[in-house]
Image 1 (spheres, rainbow, N blue to C red):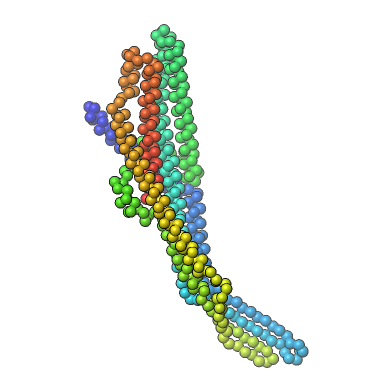
Image 2 (cartoon, rainbow, N blue to C red):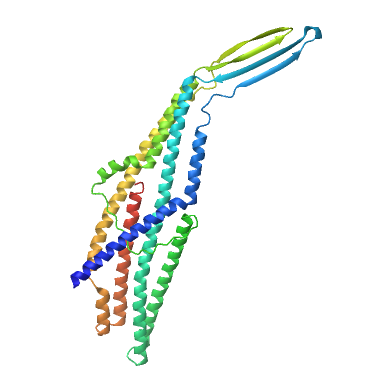
Length: 392
């Protein structure tokens, strides 16, 4: 019977963990649709996409008209008309188009990075809420047990089987446990309000009180090598470098002569001259240092990329090592607690008069403190793994 009971208990735990995972994923989906920050970011990205396509075309054509009367009047008047279009060197338009495409890719990567960060924040709130729900369950049992003890000692006091001091201790234990449970309820309401805020003001519910304990990779180096390229932090700097490289090419193209072409007409004293107008600008001063600046910026971004790769690798390796240690400690702690059924043993010992109320309350406090410590370790493990898997 004990084995059957253990199997059923494990099955119920597995169902609870699966439901917890499904509930959190559902909340993440809701927030991704309703979060006002993400909505604004999507709108900004669409606007920036349009903005990146500006400046790809030639300058506006210029039209000039002048009418001049002669002095003396008998020499007649003069009319000039010109329509001129300026063009950058042709390769400049090609590079501008490539820069626009690279900037659009950068915008998409930046949106992905910010959305992943926001969803991580939501997941961390959910993990904290699951912890508070589990803590509420533990404290609820503690309050119920404390009430039973307090009621029992109140009756014993009435018949002279317990002292007033023992009765006061029992009542004080119930009061403290009730206050702790009240504080947890306040924290739960605070976290639910935060979830609603992240969900665009729409309330969300998360009643799960069992942690989904995710698996972690067997080898950090293999996992990191496989996931490094999906990291939007690194992708963003790679896109910035791509834009910088295109800007070097564009800067070189803008240092080439600008071409002007158009139509010109002149009428004077009964004579009319018209024809093609053409010109060229000589890039002596306007674009001075442009290429040098573009190269310097590209070099700076490559240095930033190298620094960011080291920083991300070190941070994720530290998170991985922390997760390993927490996983090991949780398994050992859970195994130790599984071999101790302190709550039932303490109840029986108190009823049989084998221990005093003071000893009972002390041992019970240690038992519930251990249960809370295990919950804290599970919460910390889930937080670290959530940050480790942030961009997956």
